Image 1 (cartoon, rainbow, N blue to C red):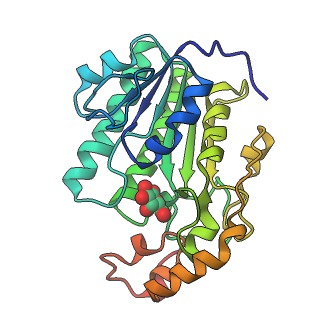
Image 2 (spheres, helix red, strand yellow):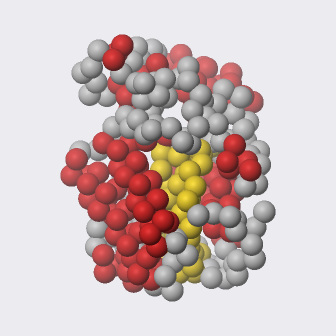
Length: 277
Ligand code: 15L
């Protein structure tokens, strides 16, 4: 599945203090001794064995210093939910551009970009989609993820960087509710996707869905499987707990129709029959 990457090479991980970063740090540390963690603030539980370099993604100089000498970049940094235009513009549009551009200037060979299911959140739940569908963002946040995917395609085609975009569902120890039974991604499985992005010899530009082996999935992730992805998480094993949690939340007449859930119903002013393809 993989080419022989010298594992001691510098691999930069942005967003290390965030939710996903916190879950995957111990797993990645075992795989990549050259891992350099970054965020605006140091994670509270940073170990002496971990390397941390602070960087504000809106500051090109700081991002350039961070990626200097790096082989790979795993870019999770940014605003991880819906936000104001200013928040999304700074953290996810300008920040993402700064990360890709600094990586290009530094000669980084591979980028794994944390896209999101919210880039395609207005697809109805009754539809199974592949990675070749037109984007249907469900929020300003989703638009910023579609922007990151476009940037990835540009930097791959124009500059030859091997870019992998992960349309991440929801990462956690278990699916939180009924919607997450379709989109859950275990920490171990996201690390497997990072490994493919960093190491598979055939990567040029790829979009994978960041999902475990979920029976209720809405996504065709065959390209990831072709490149060796073998997810071990199974959302169905947690169905009873997820359904119990769902009962506490109650229905969302709009969000329940679409893959993006509450991201679609927030600020919604359309006629529901006109939304989604
Ligand atoms: C995301 O993209 C968010 O980062 C995360 O916080 C969740 O909201 C997730 O999507 C989801 O759709 O559950």
